[in-house]
Length: 103
Image 1 (cartoon, helix red, strand yellow):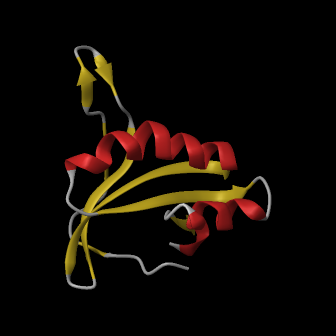
Image 2: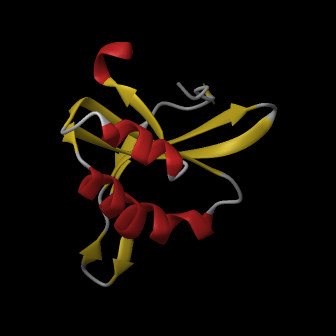
């Protein structure tokens, strides 16, 4: 399991506006420190995480927000996965995976 950054501010769900009247839902957004560096924690929560969810998170959320912050810690929180390979797939893509019962 990847080290979780020290949380500096309570997580929040936000809806940044992409363009007039078009919003992007971000389930998890927060500030933290990891290894002495400040990071922006950006994440998504899913009840049952699939490889498609991982790809969608990368494309629709992380891809659009990553350039707005100097260093990002991407995270997916789930209760379960659709197959044993999903967790490793996400980690290979640089995304930390946590299960809801770990918190």
